[in-house]
Image (cartoon, rainbow, N blue to C red):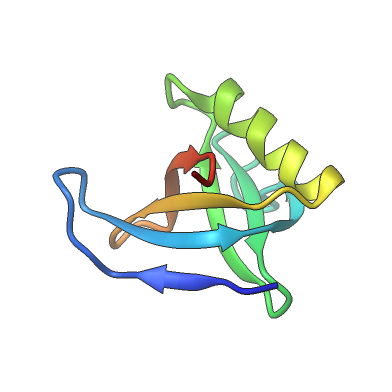
Amino acid sequence: MITSCSGSSSSQNLTWYNNSVITNVAEDPEKPEEFTRISIGISPQIFYLSKKGNDYKALLEKTDQSHKRGKAYNIGIENNTNIIKQINEIP
């Protein structure tokens, strides 16, 4: 698996993890009512989905597809928060 991280700044202030596969999806043990914990890569990096976000269900569906089927996505992480804001198909 090849994963690249792009630090380019966009209007949403995201760092992109390109061609990335989710390796684990679990409830956050510290704040299970607020977050789902997402692991990316072989040497996992931990990120979060906010359960309060408007697009939570759509993002969770994509993380499940990646985790269960090994599907790679481009994943946008909000800078300074470790919260996943976008998950895009790879063109």
